Image (cartoon, rainbow, N blue to C red; front, side):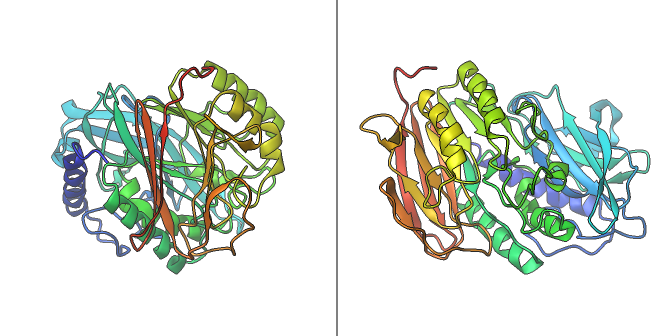
Length: 428
């Protein structure tokens, strides 16, 4: 991938280490990648009001904004976000250099009746291609997270890369060590990745608060700076309920109106329009929204992410009936899938057949966590289909004219690689 901006990520790691020392609260921490802040899985100190489960996401324009979510063991705190330009943590003490944002606080009631605080805030009005430090917490009580770094997108994004994973789906801390290892290998190979897309099923049980803490704490060495953009899976939303999932991510509120905010949404990054769909219900309503969205899109590339696959060994017939015709009509380039816990890649498909030209490629990334399934039956549409019983990740690089996909196992094997060329004469 393009390495010209590699230095900012290394600098971010250094600055977070400095901030961790400067703001040390003396509480016990999980072992993690050196140089990055970590969090405990339960109450901190005697008050339990130190921010935990911190996640950064895109919500508005990636060039000028960044969103954050965090929890606290005790509710009714303020949702305060502080940002300073550059890499000097001492600037948090300089009011003239401080950007302050007040977010929204709410509560999450767990299955055991415990109530946690949920906080979401967004920094806006930032400058493009600029390095920042941030911290979140309750400014009134001076309860702050350790500082971490991020960088806004450039005004003109000619090429970029991102990482794709699926099905971390663990139960205990040991399960999520495998997830942590997957991310470590992914970011080692693709250090310039601008964000992370997860194709759904983040934990095994959606109401398991300890599992969510393990998931996010193990990812924290990377998602402190790199936006984490998830898709809703069947282990994230049960029936119509996805309250825990929604509480952990501050996502674009531009999805289908009849769905819980954040369980369907879109965002643009450079030349790509990303569409995140919810395979857990209301397919007709999402199809109406999807048609409007794709009709309005003017980006040269379209990448869709879903959980239950259209073409991936096991197939979801509702996805095929309601959404695939729109993928065909609007020349969707790539569909990223999960759910099957194996690896598969289709030939380019259109109208349910292998396309002689154009078409959409469907990829199901193997699990990033502890759970694998037996290989499904080979289908006519499979270009590649396998079960290697290893955690996997993909790095996807996009330029104006080409999209390159590479999938690896955690032990470094290149499992699949393909290249797509920008379609000419498409409808949009």
